[in-house]
Image (cartoon, rainbow, N blue to C red; front, side, top):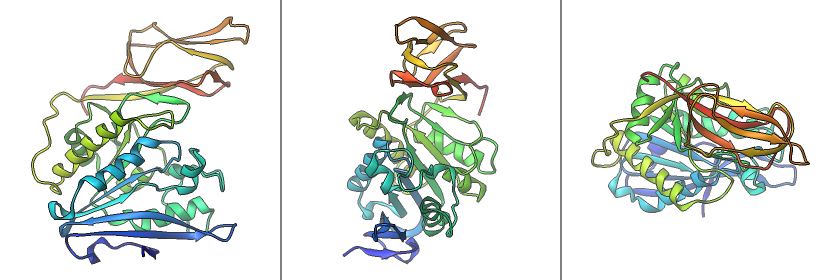
Length: 322
């Protein structure tokens, strides 16, 4: 029987154990309780403690399946420290196939560290952070692009926060070739971690709300390298000699209509190159979007329509140094 708990202390788990819990969050309007599945692989000793979190957004599939695959691939006997896996951090959103919770419409990754007296999502953020994440030595947050788009595989850390150097080193050691260093918005789980002195990265792999075997394998390789980097797994991560550092800029639709992208994630586009166009329902082009300067396409809206203000592209611009 899986125990329902309000908080998890990995240090209290005996070495070389594989333990599962239900993190108990709050009562729901239908009489059920919101509970989050948590798995702890307890190796030798209590440190380091790495927490891997996926499924914060309910329509980002590959991170969820990568967290499951990592748990299936590792044995506690081969680990040093504690590996905590939260594959489905936002069960209501995942079961609804939506980015935000269908219960209260909140975006879980904009309200950390939460509020124990707030909405269901605020209570969820409070329990995830204070009940599991706050004692970690490193946090890896697994994301992808929303159901309406696709992204170039990359990782993010906030270069302005106190943990920047450690987070940057982990991004490189994990093997990501594209690294974004922009400041994180308030309320992101990883930002709250970094502000509390916990190094963290947030991966962006996959999109469309669908499972991709190659993306899951990519996340698995990055996580294995991370665990080697922090000393949880034996061996050294493969060398990552030429990572590219970027800043990003989002492009919104200036008008509504049929969206016709001209690029794909990872494409390099020179200044003035066409990125996409918006068409009327008759098929006439009303807006052409061009690259403001040389860039790499980070993400693309793949859904055929766009409303005024909808994000249709994210662009990466090269940054000198970390």
